Length: 215
Image (cartoon, rainbow, N blue to C red):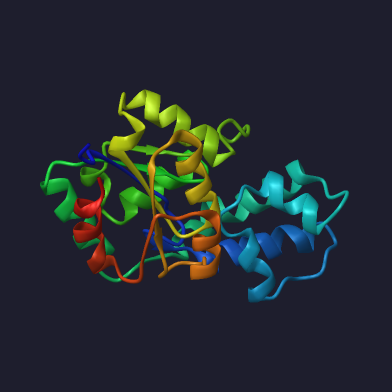
């Protein structure tokens, strides 16, 4: 069955927002009296929802207050501490012109994801930008992707989830879609392979050929 629908992750796949995420996370932790994290310590928080990851690292933390403080800085500054990966915009444009349905499927809150995609002038290439609501609905990528499979009325075998972390692969497996892991973001080959990624690529220039090779 031919692939018709592409679901792209955002952080680590389309853009690199590590600086903004790290600074906003440390802002929230400092306000709550916790020690600052190094870049290496921030890395596990890029991708998974904070409601899931924060309590594991900081037992007893007030997660909702931490989220409030994080978003306080992110809304004004953090979302702009961000850069597109080299070549990704051109590949998304090529895929759009080839007729694929393209949607964003991110763990970043939808309101921020929409702002970022618009900031980088990519809105015209996406049929929709989707992420969790601020109240936590669709925090889990498995839930979000299952919702989008139904929303776009696409058979799972005709869809691909493209992302850099194990959560992206797990979401694809959950719904029965293809998984395509990318190595220019924050996940390693071992992480993606261990999660069960069917294909793993190293450069955005490999996207179009690899997507066409899926069946």
